[in-house]
Image 1 (cartoon, rainbow, N blue to C red):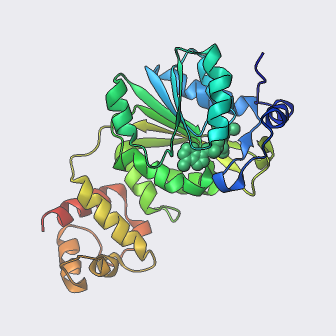
Image 2 (cartoon, rainbow, N blue to C red):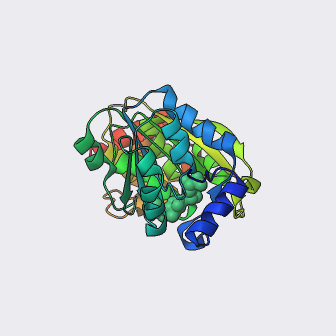
Length: 285
Ligand code: SAM
């Protein structure tokens, strides 16, 4: 019998067996709420992917929830302790449907992994919070053929990601993610549902891939990053300040006005259609 880590008692037994303490440096706040594991696994199950990429399985609570639903899982974990634990336990129960890779999820190309395996795939994870932004950026910078992504992130990050362009909380990441996905919140998870409890509450978000609008993504990324670098400034100024910009603030003002965008707006006030228009204008030069 393998010890189930999805409750605080179970998790503590696993930690005692493996003889380790959760590593703060690796964002190891383990989830101890069966309903939250079910929420993530059920969302993934809905689109019936051929396989699921799990980021940071740790002691394997989410991994089990996925495997119990008949899903095939490829799990990437950087901590050898947990890779060994999973190899000695869950892998022997699910030899055909579980693969555990000892890798840094940031450095490994998710798209190459997907190309090697073929088939439809989704991504999930209770993310290590110290690298949430670069992991999310991989959804448009690295991988492109995933169907759905379901992640536990810290609540403040979820609020930003769920904000519509034009709302105060938006960020470069939330605008860029919108290019590839519809983003929905599935529910809040309190800090008490983790061991050890982190300093913040969490939120489960679901990203469903959408066909991307026909604009050069490079241009979108360039203008979005430039505009949010100085989010308090007018966009004509922040765009002119961007490294490599060949236009000054007056020239930007003229281009923006001709394109129907108010050059005195700030990044956080631009709507999604204005971002798309701006990417088109920037691509022309
Ligand atoms: N899935 C488990 C759960 O829900 O309880 C663990 C989640 S814990 C918040 C984050 C996990 O990601 C830890 O197991 C940690 O070791 C792992 N991790 C941290 N950095 C990583 C990285 N760069 N690549 C892969 N896994 C990483």
